[in-house]
Length: 448
Image 1 (tube, rainbow, N blue to C red):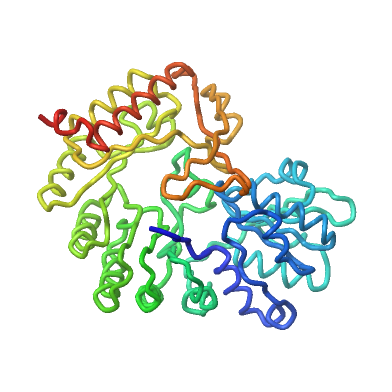
Image 2 (image 1 turned 30 degrees about the horizontal axis):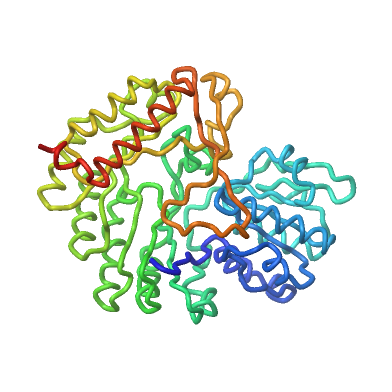
């Protein structure tokens, strides 16, 4: 999709909630969102004596955000630099030592913490009683971690929607193909070692946005001609209500012609609901395919990362069910999980291909994210994990200009059970499999 950019959901949520607080409304002026990649100097020029500069960071914008934040601190020393998002480590001592220009690190959900920081900053830089943050003492530079966490929020409607509040309206006149990210809930019941959601997200519980709010957001997307909506839920279809939520977006498309696509990450243990959602979206050409993820077929590797797969018998049964409805499905494997051997990985690929998967079988390198078990030093030592940093792989994005600050991802290249040489061989095998099967170079011969 040419010239397509996601509207900044995290920043929008922070802004929408903060501006409900009278002290913030009356004492702060918010500058336009800076979220489109550009040369650092072109971005920095847009700052006009800021009092607070806040960054929501993940692996795709971490280095650019650090470069901007460092320069902002040089030019405006009194500016409060706040970092939040999944790439901010919860144990922030080393983080503050490495980046002395950062003043506050927020962990977990950020809406309430950000509002509390802005309100407190009106009178002082003493943030010691604000839950869910670490901060740099203004007088001596010491890192202080506030150990108190915020209470669990079940009713997420307390956080206003930036879509419905008009937060993005000024952007929509731009000649840009904006895409939208939505949440219907927050949380994940699983504790996979490679994933941030259940473990790093600080809660295995679920909080929910109301159906009425989601129906209005679907209508907003239709009215504003948003072509592509990505649902950021961890397990869409895990709740019965998810079918009705999918139907809201179908109804918006039938009424307005938009959104054209509604993309979700499906639950693995809710086959009936997921199947009905898949049929609905496929009928209206809103979903390209259904995820039936494996990550690994080797029981020891699955156990080491806290994952429980559905049995292959059920996997094959579900494939047939989707095939009978002409709904394409795809599956995924991760290369480099602790406990996986080159023999078990080859066997896993063979088992997937023999299952009759007809659409795609993707293999991803095992990425290491902050605040996950894979990032824990004791876990890494236990499985003798070695990693490297490689240029960020952005499958669905344009190649970055050389003017843009490069971003990187950390991937596992060896474990106690798989050497670097074995990992390299399996990477090549994975590419060959995806070329011949996924890109169909040899698919029909293989099928025959």
